[in-house]
Image (cartoon, rainbow, N blue to C red; front, top):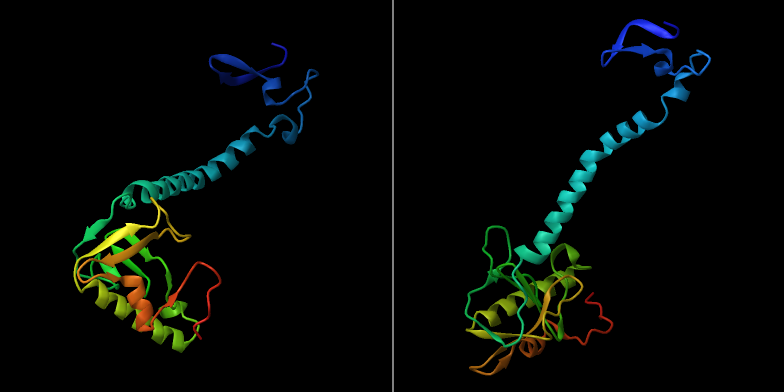
Length: 200
């Protein structure tokens, strides 16, 4: 029988010594030499598979949220808006004012062009800025709720670095530019996308 090892079968064939890492002379090699790196690679791959699956799921969800779940940006002709707004907050509905230059319509975040409002809440750099931000947000809420208004995209689908749609907001009767009205109220500043001035 030579190098056959009794009482061990492999698919109805006798197991040979070389199947256990023996060389041509019958000497059994150290485990580190005949096992190779295959099983180790497989174990590492098994450990990474759940994380890779999670990364794929997160990537798919991000794409769905960015391209399909959100409403498409307003393009082309101006859109007439007839809605009542309130301040944003938990459980307060989809149409709300976030701060002095931003409001939300369903999934759409609108950033009014031409103005800079102070940061609100925890983003404020000092109590004076936080107080001014509250006044600006309340003034924007008052202006939006005065009646129907028109949204016009600054350019088709143009957004800022935070994903907000850049819009002008005007009212036909009486004629009114919301950005100019906010500037006149003293709660926001005119802004041409240059350096921002501090509020503190």
